Image (cartoon, rainbow, N blue to C red; front, side, top):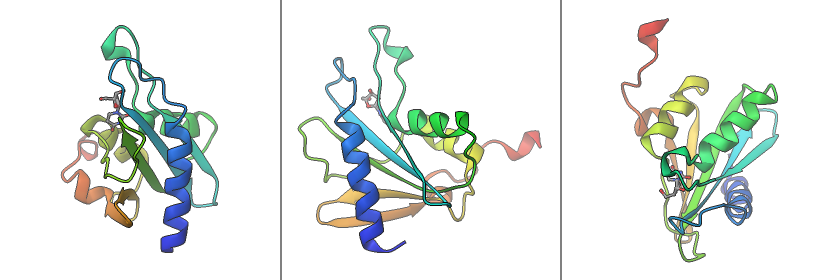
Length: 137
Ligand code: THU
């Protein structure tokens, strides 16, 4: 992916974050999941008065894509902020890393993060080494 393509995916994640339902934490998260065929599925965090019912933006995007038959994932951009500034890095939580590991190749799938004026890209295997899953196969 070129830097401009990564920035465009981050921009889609920011748009999604603006749709977050986060009245309890005040922290809005957006995710834009890119398929190998170029399609993008987005998600935002959706909180609940019963806090543990909350779902993260990354899993909203992933599960929405899988429910619509998508399986071939290339990358996900994630942004998060409590003040509308989405330029600080917001890496996915551990649960979302494990959810991504179920469907995404650990070596080639990448997580794209804003970092000031820069764009950072990490392989899923860097974020979740020794993931659980192979044991059951
Ligand atoms: N959150 C996400 O959406 N993704 C993550 O990877 C980490 C946390 C959300 C959940 C909750 O609504 C808020 O951020 C604060 O934890």
